[in-house]
Amino acid sequence: MNESEQGAEFLFLIGALVLVGSALLSRRLPLGKSFKLAMIWVLIFGGAFILFSLKDPIIELAHTVANERRAESVGVQVGDALEIKQSLDGHYWVDGTLNDKPVRFLVDSGATTTSISGATARRAGIKPDTGFPVVVQTANGTVAVERGRVGRLKVGQIVRTNFPVHISDGFGETNVLGMNFLSSLSGWGVERNRLILKP
Image (cartoon, rainbow, N blue to C red; front, side, top):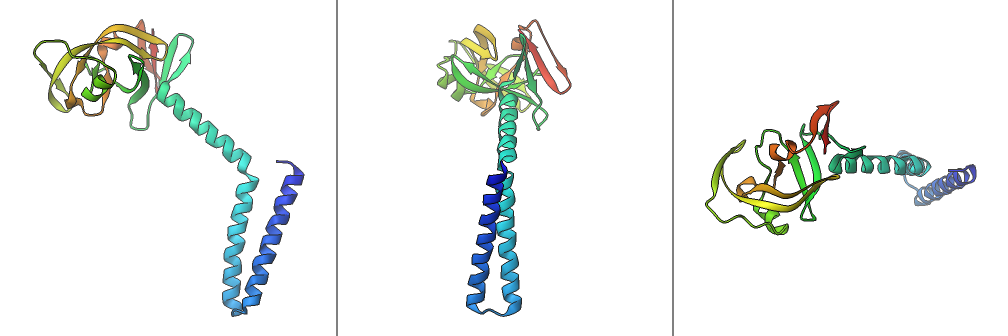
């Protein structure tokens, strides 16, 4: 913000305070009450003046936070590797696609097979294989699942085709990238609270 803009904002603040002050005087309120009202208006206009004065740094900070949140969601590509920042809940979440449909995944090395909800499977056009459901043990108990295959799974620049998954409404809204995905990579690990996936 240049000096002329700051000067214009300062003049606006003074004018607003004069206007409020004259309005209070014209109402002929008791001195104590007038003083309290005047102080409230001073605080209001002072706060507005500070916000206007700092609008550029505030906008820049908002952009920085938005970019950080985006990086947490989609990961950051560093060369061939994808780096995923640890979320506040202690887990690693990443946005990817199944058959070009956006899907949010929890990366879980404790899950043997990549698993998706029934709703996710339907949205991505993934049909269960014919055959009987199988029973698997999850962190939330025993769940009956159906097997299926994803035509195209993409996370960052990592792409897998004809990829096996488990499908079940028992997973709720959570979609999990399991060990069958992690073991298909050339390498993966955690460094400084970042999960690094190497294609």
